[in-house]
Amino acid sequence: MTTYHELDPVEAKIAARDVSVFYGDQQALDRVSIDIGTEYVTAFIGPSGCGKSTLLRTFNRMNDTIANARVEGEVRLDGVDIYRSDLDVVQLRARVGMVFQKPNPFPKSIYENVAYGPRIHGLAVNRTELDAIVERSLRRAGLWDEVKDRLSDSGTALSGGQQQRLCIARAIAVDPEVILMDEPCSALDPIATARIEELIGELKGRYAIVIVTHSMQQAARVSQRTAFFHLGRMVEYGKTSDIFTNPREERTKDYITGRYG
Ligand SMILES: Nc1ncnc2c1ncn2[C@@H]1O[C@H](COP(=O)(O)OP(=O)(O)OP(=O)(O)O)[C@@H](O)[C@H]1O
Image (cartoon, rainbow, N blue to C red; front, side, top):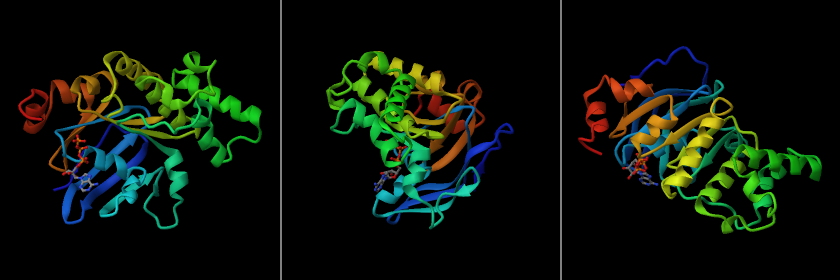
């Protein structure tokens, strides 16, 4: 059975159709179809192992980096099949950036962490332009005021929450259209988490944002669309308020009322 739920008519930034993912013989995702719009933050929720991160990784071909992973179906970005053999994956990952569970700044200066991407993608013609991109990205990530006087310090010397905002600045610096966040707050304390959630609110609308989270409270706070997954299937997808207050499916209801997960 294909679970495909029409959204309100929105322009799909990412359109996934009948996406299945296998790790060797094991099927992790079963024919998932979903539209991701830029207007919303979309949350993926569901019990551990249901395939949330696997689906997220199909959106910028991070599955390519996993030796035994195989993707079936179709993922389109602005209508273009991202699994086309002639597609530039480096370019794709600049357009569809990713922020991971554990902050992973490069062991380089704060400045270099942000400047690296724009430099390799040729987004700045001189140092002045590069400086401007670094400043703008750090400002958008809500980190500029905290680091502007120590841009040459190592990115790894920052607090966990600051490191995660640095990783968001790094993603933003290459001018992405989509930002994928895989449990971005799971290694952070409540104050750093609140700061990231606030930031997600500020970035909403400028970028299509998809967040995988184990926290239903977080999904309810930051997202306008929620998809609930169970055993590799997308069970339900809709407005976050509907999913949490009036789910259509019994399995969604069971999950959000804490019956399993
Ligand atoms: N690199 C991998 N190699 C083999 N199997 C994998 C790999 N990554 C994930 N899987 C399997 O695929 C299934 C889905 O995993 P995935 O990480 O996508 O789920 P998830 O919903 O994000 O889980 P969690 O909430 O625990 O992070 C699981 O059964 C998992 O064991």
